[in-house]
Length: 129
Image (tube, rainbow, N blue to C red; front, side, top):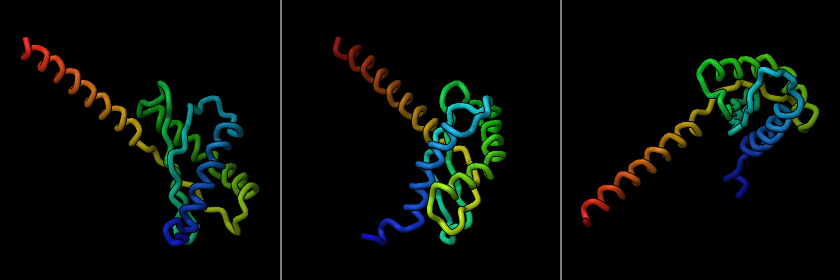
C-alpha cells in the first residue's frame, strides 16, 4: 500500500494544504484574486514543485490570470520560506506556478451537457404532441 501513495505524493498533498493556507492568509497583495491551489506535483528528487492554481470569480480573463501568476512568482521565495518553517523537510522544492484550466473546462462541458439535455427535452416534447 505504501507504494501506491509515494512520498512525493504525500509531500505534494501537504504542500497543497500549506500553500492554500499561506496564499489566503499571508500574502497581503491586494491585486491577488481568489486563488485556489488545485494540485502540487513534486519532482522525485524534491528539487522542484509545480503548483497548479485556479482563479475564482470575475478574474478569469487571460490578463488577470497572468497577473496573478506573476504575483505568485514574486512571492515564491516567501512562500518557500514559510513552507520550510511549517514542513519538516531537509530542503524545500522550488515553486513553479501554473494555471489549471481543468475547472473552467469542466464548467464549460457541464453547460454544454445541460444545454444538450434541454434541447433533447424540447425535441422529445414536440414529437409526442
